Length: 258
Image (cartoon, rainbow, N blue to C red):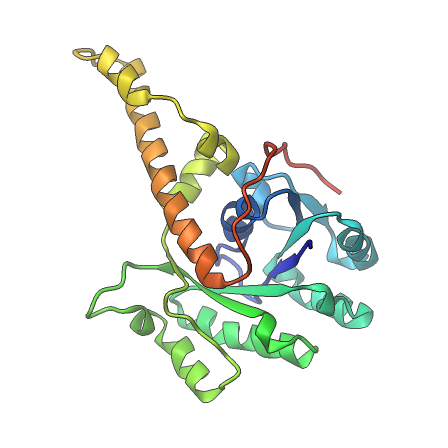
């Protein structure tokens, strides 16, 4: 049965579009990524096909959500939060989502606004069991700097509100691969489909110090980064507890506008 996911937060620059387009969509099989955004970049920057909507035309969006035959991920820009929420409340569409993913980062503002975002959604009628918090842009946890310390504002607020469930294992470290994907104009599907043996190509250029050899070295680096990131994304997806990973059977198409 198809599922509907919502990625939302009142703050910007938390990596919502990267999470929607690179972590979630590739693990849901075929589906649609719906972008509610008017001013900022969305998941199209990561080579993901998106259908864009203006929150002022909410009925157009909710009609597309309803008609979508497979899984959907809705990525809402922070500047659209209030208008989008108003549309959800007026139509009752909030109940259509199986899971709502609320990402946060290590800043105090993001963590406190995470609680505000969740409380706003709960007040609008969302079932708390559908909420998932993703601790984004973390640093590698150590004994002296565990995840609970990095996100201590959020954990303190959660201690005061038993409705808020924060999984310290549901974290994602800073991912340089995201900016690399944008600069290379490569999608996640393209990175995963690249099984070229660049090591063999590198060996064939032994003794050369030209641009071609440097390009091969760069491709090896990107390939290694993508494979390492894939394992990390799989782990985070599983910690979200939103269903099994489904491998898509068709390639991602270029982005478009709905």
